[in-house]
Length: 268
Image (tube, rainbow, N blue to C red; front, side):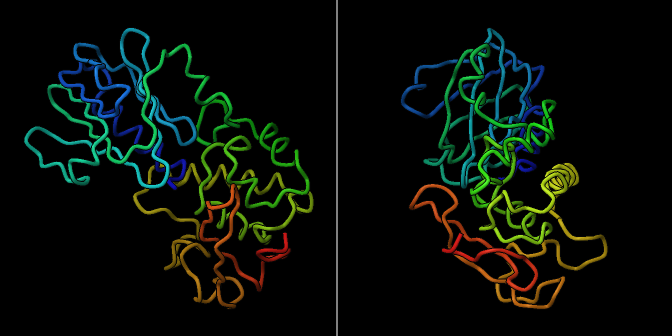
């Protein structure tokens, strides 16, 4: 699942390409939007909200999209070959006279009134990369269910918007807590929240996500490093297929059994 910094970068690319220009092509390839034509309307702005993208156009309309696991927006210049995937994966095409934005494999694509955006993003917690960031509110939401596993709480966009599986694993490592530790037992929740804000802000302008200290060869502490030595203690990084949400939505969960304290998978 894309992290908040990935969505922030996608919004910036789309905004740079489309904002301030009238659409000369509008092709929304989902059944309920098949007859929608946005041609002639200027794109006002493209803004991220957690992992959601809101493309606002003239006339008080917003095209809402969500990337989920493998969706993507690509921007192309005139005559440039579209390389984001086969044609049947295209869900949206928005073009100005100079640039074309193509949305591939978008599981969520809907058009709504801009005044009604709260219907699709109003449930989100404070946005780690947004103007509404409120660390005290994030702390309140994080600790609202003390028995809840830390990993599940971090992935819940109603707690903080923008954290995906990579940051969940890395934040748990930095907090020296397993993803199955009840949040009520977390030693320093404010420090974890500060770390989340710091990491996403540091990475929103980077091409390669990095959570480790400057000078280290490895970019991540534990995510994607199963079986390799922990950068802190040398023990092998472990991997579990753990469900932090509903059954059937298992995700790979990485952690270091040597230096992260708390219950393991299946015991939290």
